[in-house]
Image 1 (tube, helix red, strand yellow):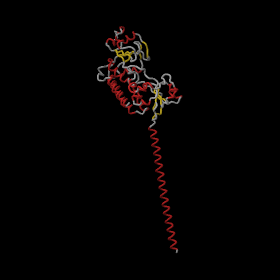
Image 2 (tube, one colour; image 1 turned 180 degrees about the vertical axis):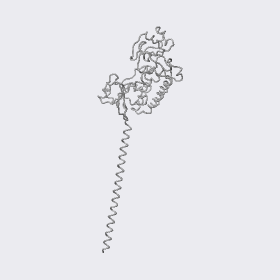
Image 3 (spheres, one colour; image 1 turned 30 degrees about the horizontal axis):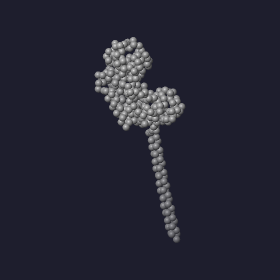
Image 4 (spheres, helix red, strand yellow; image 1 turned 90 degrees about the vertical axis):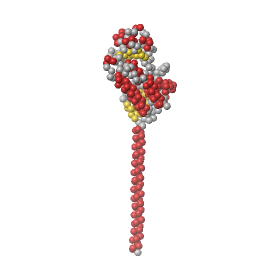
Length: 356
């Protein structure tokens, strides 16, 4: 009888032991499962955080403000048409919903890039340049507005809580940086690299030869602004002339002047080797060559009077081809193997690929 009871007790204990083992195993399994789920959730959160980081970049603008740019920039209002040209060249013209200032209509067109690849831009809403129509700007609901160096515009856009990025190139290297910055804003980074590599190659091709010129072979240049006796001594033209291996006759004479009116006596005193007429001037080359008062100028005697290709001036991407143009005028023997029109057509073909 006692033995039977002991056996029954052992059987019960064995059952309890098995139950405890199963409960313990189940508990361990649940703990491991919860741990795995926790790790997965953490990983997902980390991946999401990484994705958010990848889609958000911070770029410093002209006013040294760090501006956050995300992947949702789809509505852009550039105030200056130079930025419109860059955005179009990058293949992101569909993001432009309004403009501040466009070049005047002309034949041939002042902005060949806009005329050829984005003629619809001339029908977009214009918010103004010097005086911004903020009511119209707000109606466009821009994701970002691109402005230049005018702080008064920035104050107004800040007032209306409009995301604004300031771009104001002051050198040709700044233009290259602007292309890369805008490439980041419109998420066309690879296209921006291709464009800047192309334009950098042009600069290097010209600079690598002009920098070796002795001082005696650097010609003096007089730049005609509107009429014969109005001229400029500004950063952009002086840099262009320097890159091309020449010097503005005003650079040392009037170092602090931007634009001024000179006398005919001044012009004869400087006796420039070349006279360059601004693209938008009403004067022609023949107007200069046939002017009896200018017959004794060195530039006139040697037929070294030229008028710029329209639109190939200022701090704009098309001006890189104006640099080739002027370099050939000043130093034909150095740049006989490069043609500005051919290089420009190659560039337009490249832009065409980005705008298919």
